[in-house]
Image (cartoon, rainbow, N blue to C red; front, side):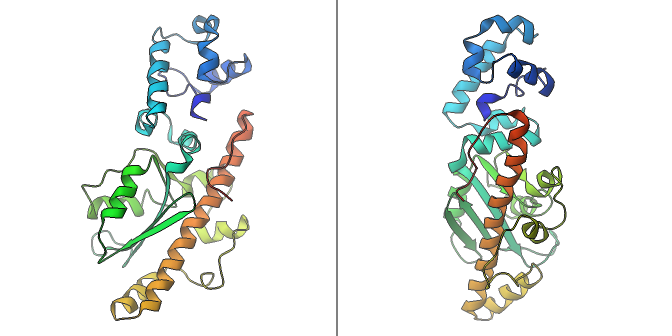
Length: 255
């Protein structure tokens, strides 16, 4: 999907891009083979150099190169281009305040792989996951997950490409909390997790700290279904986005 867009090039917006697609040029390679369009479609004389930079950034999976100039609503293109390096992320905390509360557990997933960090474990796997990530996907992470993470792990490198599903989904008519939206898109949680809510997460953590291993297992289950729900929601949002362009693409995560 990244190779279908020219919007990371300065002065090139959605309307001009659509004009290029309608002319029969939908990829960087097709543009490169159809230089006749250069003077008609671009005002900048440096397009060829920028496309060369784009090819090189794509090959080295430099998502920051594209995220610096693409509008956030176009970040799904990065996720579709590097699906194996999309990190679905959700945190659990002792409460909602970044000043008085702290992170208790962080769950993340790449494709079908889920892993978790919680207080008391080494942060090495969690840090390695962030180094791998080309795109981070959250639900309300702009206001909650990422500010908590940046506060508690200031040395952690967070990729520029962040898709906050709370706001992306709203563009397509899905509003409210994640669990409300999950019902609308027919995402089903297991019987173990379906009655667990965000309010119970701090309680489960305190029970674990008091010695209940089952409470920790429930908390991890709750977190994992939050992460899995994001995958389904992102794929649905992408399905809404791609048909507008007339360009076929596979889902971000396996279903």
